[in-house]
Length: 283
Image 1 (cartoon, rainbow, N blue to C red):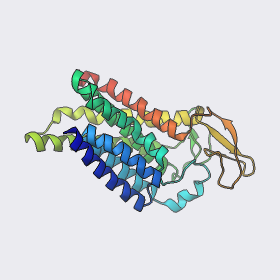
Image 2 (cartoon, one colour; image 1 turned 45 degrees about the vertical axis):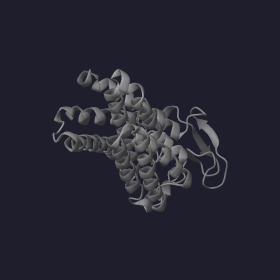
Image 3 (cartoon, rainbow, N blue to C red; image 1 turned 90 degrees about the vertical axis):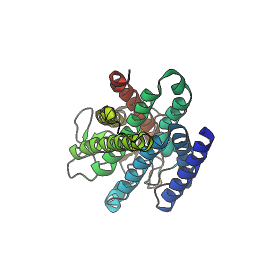
Image 4 (cartoon, rainbow, N blue to C red; image 1 turned 90 degrees about the horizontal axis):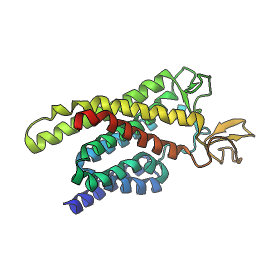
């Protein structure tokens, strides 16, 4: 059964990845990352897990193209463009894939599967909330403020937040929570002919954990994420090689903690928060 599910997961993730490449949402290496994470999540986590991943990918890809011309002015701020590469796909879905492996092995034997599932949903809510906050927050007419000090910063600065971006993070986390709840009901109805309304707690748990993960992403961006400075353009950037062609110099942060690692750690933290919040409901 697991072999068939893995094969189906491979077929579905390859199809979604190819579509993402055709639509300009994924690079060639990003397709590989989507296939790796998608196969494990679909194949070992199951259809609800897999479709939640698809919900994230579709919404994130759609928003990356929303008012893209306006966002193009911020290209010098970010380490990568809107075409997600291998590192980005693993940062967003890698922890979820690990949880799927754990759920399919140790989770079945010792009853941890519900907490691992809630951890997965919380992680996906976090990466979706962070993506929505980035894609919509940079369009705010309000000047961002550093999440740690409240100091006004330029648009696109790591750790800078706006009210619009924070609300977008909440909406993005809530979107994944809602998709999760609806998919659980659909799966229950398809297999038993009944709804599983007792799982209502998924909605607040995934939303709160996801928002917390997105906010942690901003905190790390403002404090310990690796940031460079281009002396020629006199601008901060996440990229070692600035878009002007000059090599930027380290300005602050830990050398190993790039944006992809920040995303991964934020999703991990959100999954732990979701498991803790869900503990009273599943224990």
